Length: 313
Image (cartoon, rainbow, N blue to C red; front, top):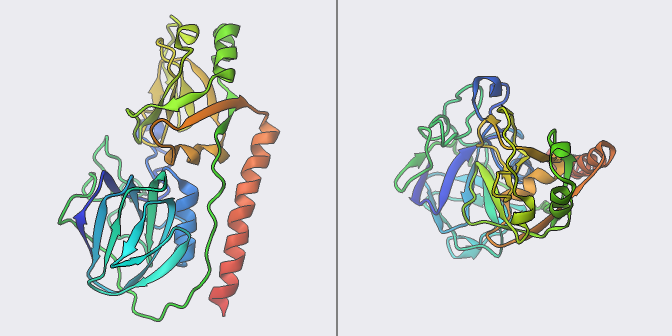
């Protein structure tokens, strides 16, 4: 068991998400940084989809009530196991009554805590992920609170793994596919979108990242459209000209024009952006997007190969 002493800003149980229900209005949910989630699980020899803890910003404290092994990945939020510093990209044996504390971060917004054997909780629609809007999955459909008890299976065998894993590089230029309404917007609007440096608005969350910029007047519009399907990565352009990048907990339909869609290889970057971080966008071809995805997949494959050799020994 793990006891929540302090949950921090937002602590939730997540796996890789709820797939196959968007036509019913059910959001995907799941870890916003899927790559950090997978790497953390692989470092403790879990299945990729095993549930983990997603921690936002920091200021969290957890007490372990049994022996286990953990791995951290994602943001470096100055974690300490008792008084000993622990770092993203490594696994650590934990003894009963030890405490894992997170301060504020050195970089990034979300850290992922994988526990040997995964976090235990009931599945809803084939997933353990917490959907905060629908109040399903995870721990009674809500963020974790002080004194909550998280179920895990104790692990008491010796743990000697010294393998680590690097974080995929952070990008400030986010790559996009053209959206279905690209040609409905004025050339001036598209040009402004492609040449503007955007900053992350503090009013961002798991539903979406709101972007601020100095060209909102050029990007304002009065288009009125029928609602259509949207998905994580869809970039909506509201009438005020300030784009919204939809994330895992976003709605399944929307009526704002879709100026683009973030490629799969870059979407996880939005899990780690912090308020006032700056980004720009560029449109790429399907071939470029596929090459970017293959590069990240190769990174994961190399890690899996290296770790499989270790587990085999």
